[in-house]
Length: 126
Image (cartoon, rainbow, N blue to C red; front, top):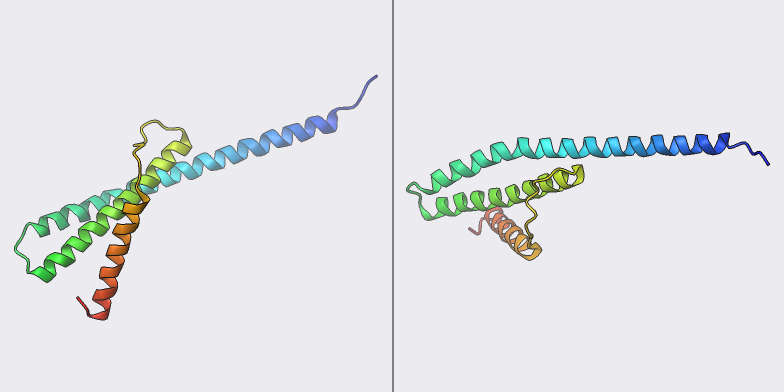
């Protein structure tokens, strides 16, 4: 018994091509995320460094609270950026991801604290 498998072979080839295209798109996305995370981290480290220098100067209490809020917010943002970079590295199959545990409760607490400070400042309650 002889059967024509042409249609089945074409379908298999189409599936392989679609899989290869999806893998290439995923790899490109991961590479883009890793590059962007790195490009954002560089100026963020500059902001943190300059804020740390500012905190080492003579500031009144209000100025110090503002500078500390900038520093804490910058640290939180840097953690998020690092997590994105790690996720991109994991997706891309690259070694060297930090693989450290992340505390959602601690991140939420920092975010809530920063937002409430910001809300009080905008309302003039600081």
